[in-house]
Length: 452
Image (tube, rainbow, N blue to C red; front, side, top):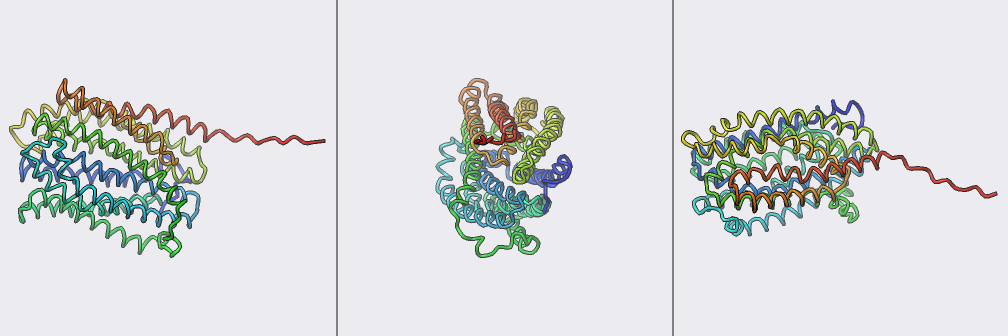
């Protein structure tokens, strides 16, 4: 556990971000290895099949990630306020909410797996592979919800190292199981999905054992499991909008995927491979943002608004500088990295990936600011403006899908992200500076006239 209300903000932010960054980078390296295994052992169509499910998975898993991150915001605020009973009660409430949504998400996602793939005009040559992969993942949604909840609760208490360790072990297991299920048991993409679910269950088990043995703060009493509807509403006020924001963004990604599917399997595979590199490159920016949520929530609970303002300023310099450097790197080196996924003789695919990297890498600074402002506002417990920003992302992606992709093809699809980032960062930036100004303004005492 780490109290982020004391000490040098930039040092605390870096020390919290580094394990988080390593974990997220390791996760993305696993995703790249997973893509490499699929593309090399099963084929380009299988790679396209996995890519065609990405936006659907983001819709479901993204909601789970956003929901659990939002629930843990209240936990971090209680921890910053030194309210130990409130921390335990917050965790109990978060578990109840997560359990209910796990059941709901599993039922809905399983029922609509095939209809959604068909609705998205998934190319016939990859439809069955996409279904066999996605249906297994959807049956295991509960494992994803539980791991994200436990990891976010540990981070809310200032511990970003333990989730990193478990994530690394889980990713290694996932790669081993991928190879086992594909090469030995010949299970195809269904085996890839099963490997993901099993590794997530493994990481959940590790988290539960660690919390039981090493985190006395989270060893509950019976009262901590009691249902307090006021407390539930407080958690839902932050958690549900954060989950909803991810789903809103995912809807735009689904619409964009529909237009990509219309461009053919090569375009889908190019976008999928380039997006893997893109996600790896932008992970540090995302990690800085996630750090700011915990940093802000703890300091907000402790009423240290001055530290929040200083932390945001320092984080913008750090993350912004990195975004410019890594943007240049992916523009020039990205296509070479994509070639690792597809082998020789895929010149059209590599040419398309160059368009993606040029349009996205040149606008990483916008994404850096977006992450910092969004997570800081969420750490303050604000949900309205981040939701509005999510709606703006949806609108911009839909416009790119409907108008730009129809007119300029793959380049139009590649411009969807930069346009979405621009549309979101404007309301987020304005809301942050107005909020921090309001919170920093001292309340003037009310003078009471003295009667003679």
